Length: 448
Image (cartoon, rainbow, N blue to C red; front, side, top):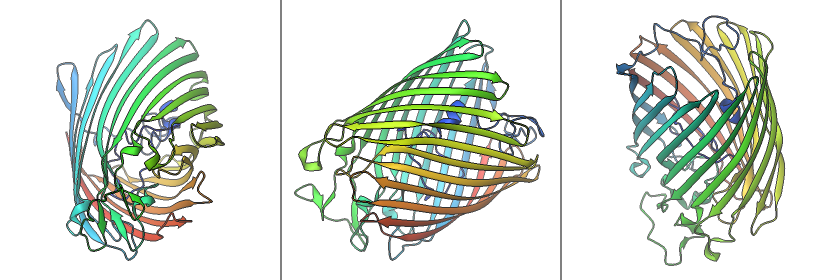
């Protein structure tokens, strides 16, 4: 089960961009999307291509390189909370990050601090401040590598994210962003056997949710309930608190440069710590995944990255559920200046609703990146995300998306980006409402 949400917040995405269930994509962990390089070198994409004259240098302090960055954005969302009738608003985002990495020949350590403040003048209860902190390092033991990392995240779950429709009933209530924290610790050990690498790993994740603030459509907070519910909607989110314990082994075989075979076995135990009859049956359980895959660069034009397998979910108080799972990524570079990427994904996730064990998540995305000039990058995409809820009588929701953007690398210190996103949400059997969003955003990034 892929459940370590939002370890990194995409820098060029507007407020309402779909936050995919976590740790997306596994392929990007095991098979790097592009190898940094120049021109048409094998594995180099438009986005991974090195641009020394526009890449920030960072600040050297002894054996460390420090990379500060500040983003200032302003945008417009035609339907900020995903309701009918829509509520439009301008929004402003201010983000800052500080990354550091060691510059040692052997072993490494690095970390990052981020903070993002978003202000929504027309709907003040949607304003949020999020922050994250992470630290990790690797230690060489002969040819082997021990890697340890830890993260703490204070985030908010947007009312327009996937799997939050239980808190947004059309014409009745809507929710402010729901605060949650995540603590995550990961340990892995890569055994280098030449072309074969074996990587056992263990991950621990704790998710803790704060109470939801529910509002009437006039913007006033609804009085606190006496029985824990408002019109059937739980006001407390403690029933979603859980611990995840994941152990696995990855075997990787490099049969040629940029050509690897992969085999993964992962077992995850999910422990809901505050479940009670008030919030439905205990949804604790276990998930077993087995995947095999290949990363194959046939030329500088085509690259295929695929993981396929099967997942079995067993629940303490629900019937078990199993499904084929996969991740696919095809990269086509008709020229050195254009990259076309097709992504597909299918897995099983935990659900927010206390009466639903989980959902099968399926997504697809087609993106085109084009280097118009060395310092002007264009992109366009279309996407689909769908959640089919288990034990929900056919309940599902689907997001259709499309968008475009342009990034102007003014110099190594200043980057500008202009983006537009279109979102069409469709729900079935209570997983509505159906709505449309238009989101535009202008961003200025300052880096050193």
